[in-house]
Length: 181
Image (cartoon, rainbow, N blue to C red; front, side, top):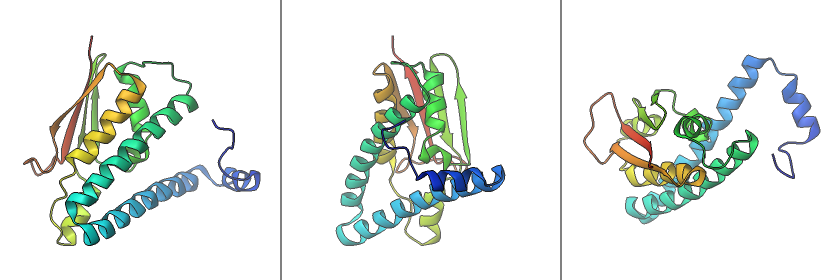
């Protein structure tokens, strides 16, 4: 994948010896930890500079992350230029964001897909802490659009619903991906 493969040979050997279920648990724990760090950074920026500034920073960071993830996954899985919507959705499912979203549904056809998050850990954690809903629409839209456009400029991403939009109790956000002809 890269000039410098992740982990030392010893680390790779240690992980290769783990039972598959334990390795998967470990893998998902590390993804969860990535999201914990993201949340902790956001909360500290929000405390110091306010929600608007924290959201602007978060939007830029996640747009950059989307480009990095799209290019890395495209290379790792040897995906050709301008993949179709089903291929983009397969790669999106492999992102740290999507893997950390266990309560998602994805409906895919040849030229269109809809991704919906039915429960959101981030939003649920904020509500438990009494922080209120995070208006994440710009952050998530920037991430999903940058991810799709990095892979294929002809894919349009539309937000169907996302906070601060009003949403049903069993749906936090929903996104449409369409191939433009």
